[in-house]
Amino acid sequence: MNDIVRQAGVTGTDKAKLYAAIVIAAAGIAAFYFLKGIQDDWVRWSVFAGSIVLGTLIFAISQYGRDFWKFVLDARIELYKVFWPTRQETGTMTIVVFVFVIIMALFFWGVDSLLSWITQSILSGSGAGV
Image (cartoon, rainbow, N blue to C red; front, side, top):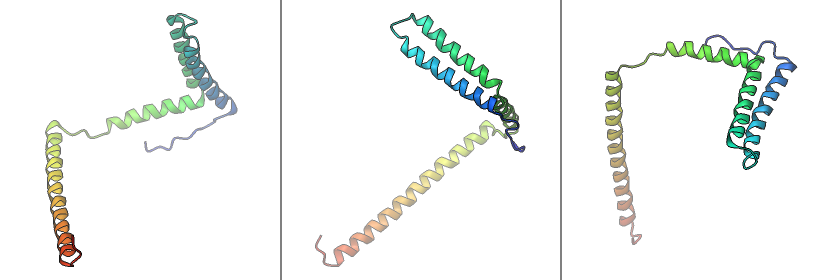
């Protein structure tokens, strides 16, 4: 994503389309719950699905939707540039991480034991009466 994505030409109409898409989708979700017990399930699901599809279509024809689609396409191109490790490399790195975690756990256990022993030696040797 080397190119800077700019929202070129976002107008008041595009903002209105965005708000309308949000309101239509939210109204469909609210209607789904409001119609419970009043309408059959197929009616509720139809209203819900229709509002989501309509909201998505309105969003898609706005500048925001076009910018989002361009972002998705650019992200897909970047995904192809990713270096994916082989199975052997993944297994090797997993083993390295586990060994490092075990070594660090032993190190911190040793440091903790040493500091605990030093603290107990200082407190018991000072006549504090433990």
